Image (cartoon, rainbow, N blue to C red; front, side):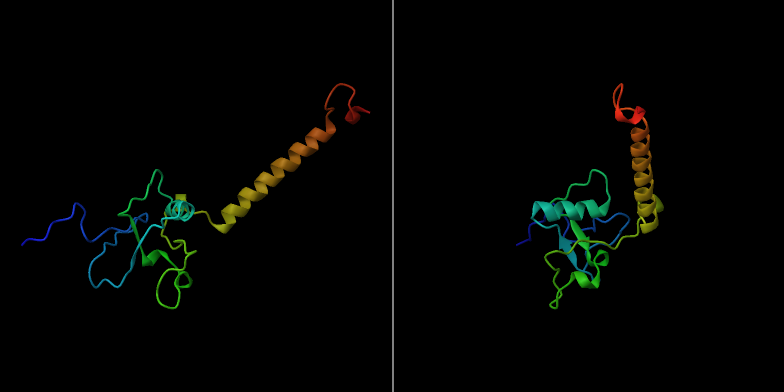
Length: 130
């Protein structure tokens, strides 16, 4: 009797951006399903930085995208693990320096706005005109 063929291949692809890993015997990687919990599922999808990506029951992320700390002693993913190891192109990377520049820019704009508001009257005859 011939085994029924699945609509989807047994060797799934990693869903991470730019990752070409495919699930094959003996490749030494684990291929993790997306969590069923909606909050964690969204965290995993957001970590991929793939616009419009929606995980299906067949979506997988390979172990290359998890840190060693993501695994417990028995080699299973911790319940709070999120994929964080990616090789994004420059336009998708948000480095600490870029993040701080954004924060500093936002603070400077806010302080400038507040300073300008304190120099101008809020309404005719306001306290700032005295």
